[in-house]
Length: 414
Length: 106
Image (cartoon, rainbow over all chains, first blue to last red; front, side):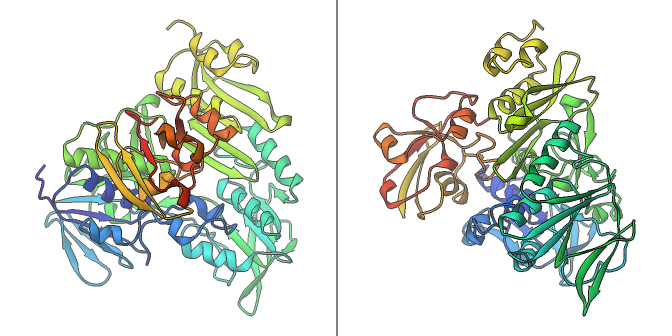
């Protein structure tokens, strides 16, 4: 690909910002334009529900790069602008300020957006999402001692916000539609553990309950109405019930999408070789599971930024990866490697009562996924074993007195 | 403020000023220095910011925490002077610090 190619990146989140920096790091000499809807330069989102919310991180530490980085590296960063149309024939993108950008290579890094609930009161002041720094700012301003925070959705974002809310002295209750927390993303052992841990820290739960509306007074939220008719008073509510990919631009331009833009191992659109899609908006192959899916995680955004930047600059494709993610709540560090696809056995190593254990998900004698609580060795070695597909001795794996190094060393002969 | 020298595995040197309070990892990432991936952004969750601290700086950079120790235990190419650079906070004391990087981060 020509070294002088103009790369236009639509979306200035973790994926888009990283792709721009990596292109320069990998020696791309042509112009780079980075277009972002938000008014600020690319920043890390994970701390928004954790360190940042608790006041332990500031805007400078959130930023991926210092603001002068973009000019210094000849990256034309355009904040507060959204791409509204893509014309693949003419290779142009129309922007919300009426201007148009010509590209040689386009990287779609438009991310995902929080799902709004189709219920009355969504527009009340104090009904919040947690996706952007502005969202987090609004949330931070409303929680503190004497305040009550309602969390709608018992997923990772909801639970992290609940933990931070408690740390800031607010009363917190969580409403979850399913009978258990983290129902879509974690095993039952973990759900039970997290519920007990949060309850110990004073969080209340309404499981198997649906929010039917938000009550308000003077345009501000005053409570959450549940399907059993009860209204629970609160000063603010955070809705964390999942996200959908921002793939409309791609769809409208005729790029193949399947809940996300369908791409190959280079993060390149299967429809148009001049277009890449990375991060939350990409529907991508994951060879170790022999299937394609969409992921919402920072490691995924970084990995795909590397794939696209490598392909564009003619570097070899990055080595195969094991997807992973993490969550911090109170003094718990949860690290997850892999996905529990095609699992026929679940094995717990360690004792949840000690707040230090790992849940291994196995297919035959291969590890498909591991969820590790305050157990870095289980996470690190589990991640290696998932990637290597090396069979393991299950009796040794289940025995916490056998070190993970030994488990890996004595893996059954393959 | 501390002047920190980051040396890539291939020998390429990068000398940058890093503000107090930032971590040695953040100093590299914010200056777009290759070789420190820092996938988790400093949460001590990934071991992709592994560096070797020049011997004479080991005392000033402090001790590994228990969490860091167990993450490093499973990283590649770990030596006695290995640290996770996200766990080293920059102070005036570290002016002149030299760290080198492993061949790859996993």
